[in-house]
Length: 165
Image (cartoon, rainbow, N blue to C red; front, side):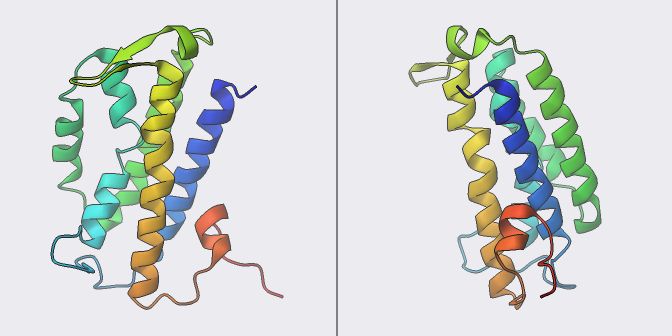
């Protein structure tokens, strides 16, 4: 059976890989935007600094405006500030998970505005747990499109440069 530590560890691994990929943004490509209605590279990175905790913080507190305040705070981040912001998200995620009792995953219900209530465990899986790898993949594709052709599966899934042959 999957427990909360496994879920947390998986999310932390995603943040580690995102931090690694953020270090690969070519100079001058912060404003790269693949299409008119898509996020720029820096906008995507800013979103990645809070998408793993936004829903969980809102669900646990019942304050569904938290996402808005997190977005406002992230909107000012420079590329150089992204790694520290990712580290803060990881630290905060650890604290949030530490406060969750094992029974809470199946018994505590999260009532989202205008949606069905979900057990906390399912809510976590349907929010930050999915958002981190999804938007990490988008970041990886942005990097490939911006000329970082040497990036491969090691960068994406392990958050490390490939080992030399």
